[in-house]
Length: 452
Ligand code: GLU
Image 1 (tube, rainbow, N blue to C red):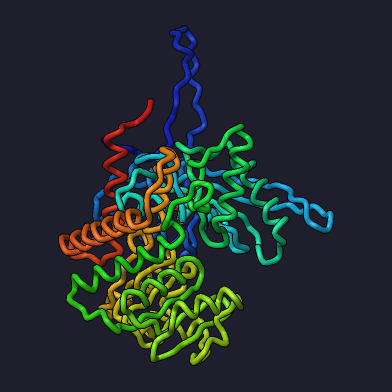
Image 2 (cartoon, protein in one colour):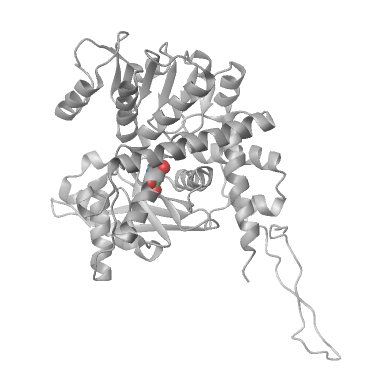
């Protein structure tokens, strides 16, 4: 099946009748819809550059490329929220479905002052490839609200969440599009989303979101899943490459959900975590950081600074610390052409989505640094989201060891699928993961055929 992009055409409208003076009306030519512009170092620019590279290797035709590059549905919502001081503020949010060939769309909701439509497009596209790489039956989606949650009280945050959910309600459903947490959102926010949607339906709909608290139908192990999945992958890579694990040094950028559980899991596996950071800066301890103690310190103080026996480092210094495994688990565009030459790690395991720019990738490849790409490495979150969704739909709940065992098997299998693709085609792991994911989506598109 060849899918061509909508090329300009001339339509002849003759009204179906032959008359002596039939008039040919030339309709204005529909111009090919331009893909939204992608700026070079934006997340969307990165996503498009990665796609183009993989599509070339897969030799996808221009029409298929045009289709897979575009987001299927995009919605912008502007909505009011009543603030505690009695004023009303308008917020802007988005929800984007990138592709539905392999199943309903799946992806997180981001609350951040930096959210843009283009960023959400990139993140939705990465979700599509991610779900395909780990072979779970979803397409990709993402949502976001432009908001600095630190400036809201709990009541305002709940009001914003409930109104945003109401605004996007026609766009989400348990078998159409299932949101989850992402940067700036958490299980409590998922609980409010689930409750709001359920109130509209008149009954509980636990399958509408994943990443819910366990007492309302969340899955055991979901909260830890992304960070845990990152380290299952790193451990498998160590085993496969024959590298020595005990005491290998790990540095983690970001101490949110992904970073904190990646660091804790690394510590539990016998790695030595020597540096971690959050938005306000990092800490370094060459002898190794006691993660359970640090987590308790962080919970009590909401900051890493002042932790016993560690020295303060800036976020940029943290990325260049001497270590074996660097886990960027903060946000996009952290490893760029400007600092890729300064990185001392032998492996980068991407916990965040899009932390490395294409320019940095080239430098890291030349330097022989192994990069385990985001769409494979951080897929543990959406894998356990899939388990949670299945449990919610069936109202049948699994034990945590069962969840973790299944997660580990999927991460290991996916890592080897990507590694095999990389060896077979002699391409870096990132390109191999993209080729695998995009190739599977293109195949599903062909198998389903086009409607009508
Ligand atoms: N936001 C997470 C991600 O980027 C999880 C998405 C989900 O669980 O649906 O993969």
